[in-house]
Image (cartoon, rainbow, N blue to C red; front, side):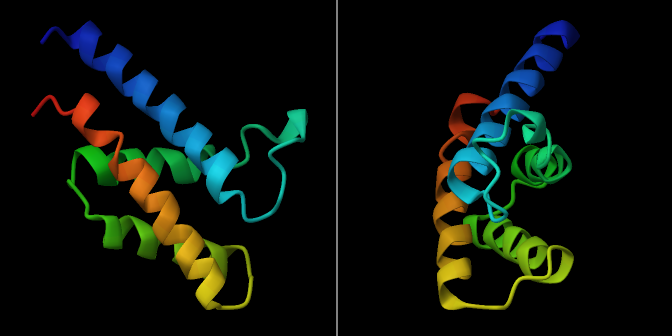
Length: 102
């Protein structure tokens, strides 16, 4: 695959992961705030690397998202928060087949 195609696919994957994070994960409740649409980009970029380069499992992605919620955002640990992260990880893992180029 040409390098330009890889960049386009990576950009498309980033966009899809960012949408999942904003619409399904959204731990701080900002999905309807237009000025905050880039709030989760850093986390989305890390998830893309995990998804494609590290071929991370659902469990690894859920654990990363949960760590962000608890240790970076300062929310209390809870089963509901972990369940949300696991559900979001399912949605993210479902994106992988359309982007596997390795």
